[in-house]
Length: 200
Image 1 (tube, rainbow, N blue to C red):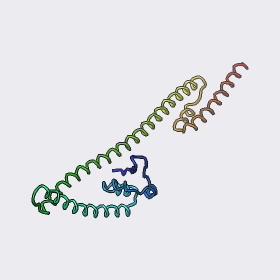
Image 2 (tube, rainbow, N blue to C red; image 1 turned 180 degrees about the vertical axis):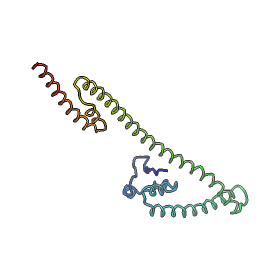
Image 3 (tube, rainbow, N blue to C red; image 1 turned 90 degrees about the vertical axis):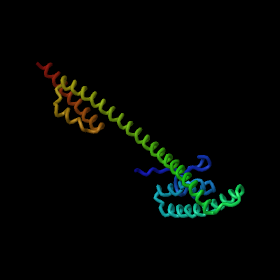
Image 4 (cartoon, one colour; image 1 turned 60 degrees about the horizontal axis):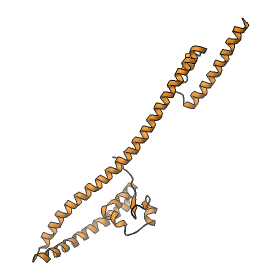
């Protein structure tokens, strides 16, 4: 699948991070959102900054491990407010189940965002192809008009089929130049015919 570059947004979209320089100039705690979601590491990867991405992923993995331990203790203490005692193992198991569900939801959200980006890219490519298709159709229509015009002039002035055939396959500029050249020939032939008629 094609890798799609995406930008990071800060300050509700007011700041767009496109390059490493943008990132370095706008370091703020707001980056935690992108760090925690894993988006910051992906952003680095799509820009071929693999070494930085690996450091980011290692830092995130360590943070998650530390946070998990804190969350287990916090959940255990929270439960013990309501019941007399909860084992650390039960608290850990409950947190793992909860984190699995949360992780799946977050993964789905990230996949949806990624797919939205791919869809937008495909829409842009589709519009470009449509525009090219319209140009081709215009070119074909112009060619047909030109062919009809040449056939009409051919029937009146006697331009050879080889001369007509030499127009097809030329670029538009070359075709117009060749057509002007043929028009000059036709004028000359017409003038010659007129002179012959007058002299007889």
